[in-house]
Amino acid sequence: MKDRLTLKECIRITKRGIVILRKYCPGLAGGKAVSAVLAAVQPLLSVWISAKLINELAGKQRGTLIVAYVASVVLCNFLLLLIKSMVDRITEEKEAQMWNFFGMVFADKAMTMDYADLEDTKILQQKQEVSENLFMFGNGLGQLVWGMNSLVNAAASIVLSLSLTVTLFVSHTGTKWMDSPLWIVGIGVCVLLGGMANAKATGKENVVFEKWCKETVWFNRMFVFYEHELAKSPERAKDVRIYKQQKTAKRAFAEMKKRDEAVGCLLRAMATYPALAAAVVGIGTVVCWVFVVLKASLGAFGVGSIVQYIGALGKLSTGVQDMMFVLADNAVYCRHLQGLYEYLDIPNRKEEGTLSVDVDAVCNGRDEVYGDFEIEFCNVSFRYPGAKEYSLRNLSLKFKLGKRLAIVGKNGSGKSTFIKLLCRLYDPTEGEIRLNGVDIREYDYEEYLRIFSVVFQDFKLFSFPLGQNVATAMEYDKEKAEQCLVKAGLSQRLESMPKGLDTALYKDFESEGVEISGGEAQKVALARALYKDAPVVVLDEPTAALDPIAEAEIYTKFNELVGKKTAIYISHRLSSCKFCDEIAVFEDGTVVQRGRHEELLKETDGLYHALWTAQAQYYEAG
Ligand code: ADP
Image (cartoon, rainbow, N blue to C red):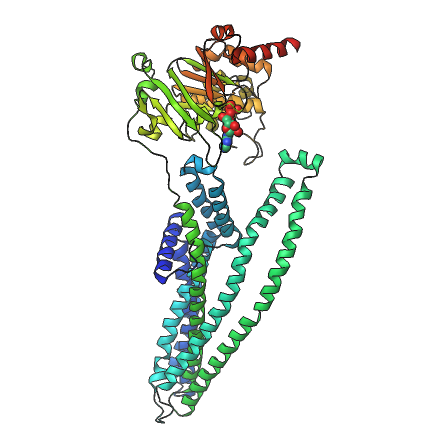
């Protein structure tokens, strides 16, 4: 991120910020601008009409005009304040919601960025810094919303107050020294000096505040972790009680206190800057007053105009101060916005091809086409981003659609990684994965993904109604969703649900939501995979959380469950792989054996035999 930005860069950055605001919080920027203009117009209009009223009272005292001026002041104030408060109501509501919409800016990016980047610690840190700066202090987009209000208000105040002071400078007293244009220059310099002094004081404070914000990010994270994770999460509550985990977090707070004391000293030292700025503004104000009063006393204008000019010069001075304040602040929020754009602009490196997959043929299971589909891993090696070790090494494996493939192996042998690569969550570091002889990177990604239904080991369900979880849609085929749940072995549980498919899972959003066990959740995930009706079903340890009876139920129904589809089945329980057409045994990120259960068992010095015997002994002993 650049420390010094040119005006052109600031304008470009601000423009993009406004585009984001208009997309995510439509009406907020416009509402703020209208409110700011009204806030500038109202006092100056009052001053202008009041000046006319006082001039009339001190002069000809015409009754109708006096009544008209009084009525205008009251009516204008009433109307302007009415419109402003209506606009403010609407914008306040939008402003209260803007944090949720800012959250969506990050969510939208996270949902479209390369999956690999979601795990990249550098990118995670980058996102954390930008989002915490925004949500804790409003840095970036928040400052843009607030700054824009001040900028428009300041600009409107300057224009309006200048128009009310034109006559002050052009009116003549007949006295040479008093009518000298040097007064205009002098007053202009006074107003500008006041603004610059204020901007300087703000700039000094901003530097300290910036430093503080940067250092506070880590501590804020610790606070959030302490409050939300350690204290409120039931999953952690057990460990907190047993191991008193909160002690480690508390130590960080002591460090933060020390740091805050140091920053506090620095900020106290800054207190003299605003006071000095106020003194400069005060001197400027006195010069303006002296000029106006002297001109009036020499007969250039009446007493009412004194009110107008003093009021307008006061507004001009605060307008200039606000403008310079916003411009000084602009550089700060532009830097934060730049940080946000750097995160939002992280490019998607994943190649996306254009080739079409004949999904229809595959999905409808037209045998003649279906049987021809084959997937091949050609000498694939893969290393996770930032990892030193390869998780897959020179892995070659070919399988035809319509078959049952089991993948077995010890923990960490690369089974789940193989699935992640198959679904293109990651691309191989070396080698190629081919669908019908064509590198899968050349296919349209969305179409390619339609081939797969995956139940990941660490799948997640949402706290939405059961049916929506199965269909992953608001509107869905209820009969099909029920059938899938029944196939996955959840018929009894479904009957006991108070609102059937409309019963919310968990209690995050609905107090009547039901808590389901890990095994039941796994069955819902299975039903979700079946509902998608993709030609290839991948089950990564699908029965890990199931009780032995449910596991046996799933195994016996497995063929029926998967039907004509291809099934890739990862399991630790080798007995569940016996019915598969082929078993691939993984070790250290590569395939070391392949074949049917009976064939592999015959290879007595092979890994499969060793794993099988170990499990058989375990069960026999049990
Ligand atoms: P399995 O599914 O056979 O238990 P995995 O495919 O999950 O094995 O893991 C294979 C290897 O890759 C392991 O050494 C594991 O530590 C490593 N690994 C898995 N996920 C990641 C990740 N996100 N980042 C870095 N290394 C990983």
